[in-house]
Image 1 (tube, rainbow, N blue to C red):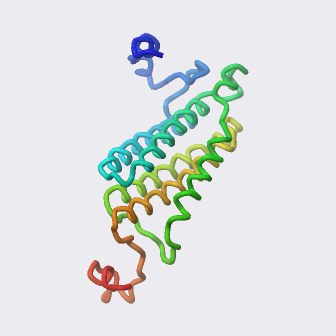
Image 2: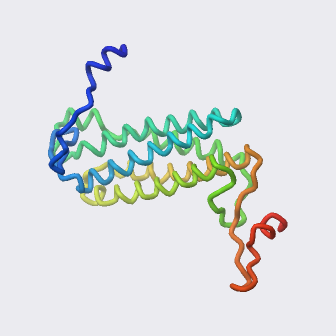
Image 3: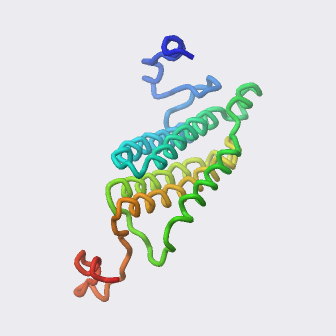
Length: 214
């Protein structure tokens, strides 16, 4: 498909959502605070922030594979969004088939978790978000992913979504956690870990003790 074809096929609409309603892929109109649009918004936010993570990771030559993985995750989220926007109860069989959730995405994400996770040291304490900008951004994206996952639960209960889509987002949060640790290690930063204070007047988790304690 050429860029001119793309330009003719996709135009920025305007005004169709001014009344507080918008259309799903099956052309059904719903209020924008509907559970389906909440889920679509959450997955869109997640994809957008993965773009931020990818842009940050591009500044480091050792993270090119992570950038590629993040881009693939964004593509998967586009497919998840299409699936969410096609509730089976009110959609044609043709559109349901076109936007059916692909279980291969779950298999791929499991393989990515193993690929990156096997190269990391064992976890011995709770890991805090941090360890460099890219690592912190990836951990933040993990939290966004958890929210997106929760937003799909009502749709799953109503049988408006394939349960495997929920499983995919659950596994994605695991992958983002692993990628955050990977970014920390590759940038030779120290992972921030939870240390329990002895008391509120003798905090042993100040920054100095955090880096001195081995």
